[in-house]
Image (cartoon, rainbow, N blue to C red):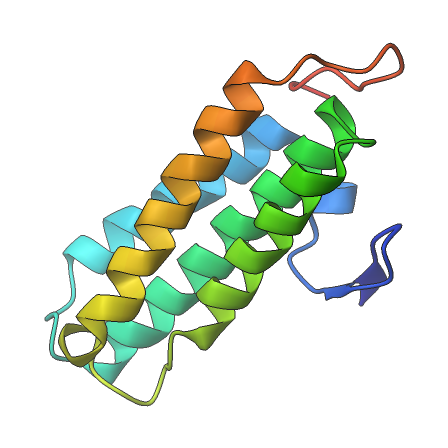
Length: 127
């Protein structure tokens, strides 16, 4: 597993994958979810993987776009923890508060990323 510059463990492979490819993978996970009953544990497992993947993608975007923005980095790390709080051994419908929290936090992070001023040494999104 790779470690980010902050020392957290991540196993989503985003360090070795372009953001565009990661978005395609996330889209495929979403399509897979649509094919499975929401009460299935497989549904919860795929959803958790997708949430963790999406949070990891936002970590990567934050690190590339605004690596010195400590408050945003903290919010992105919290989003990653929220994604990992989703349980794969419990139906997703029973975890609706956790799912809502994930989406609220993700919306906040996306809005802050969109408003952040990129650093001079930031990596373009498509790389």
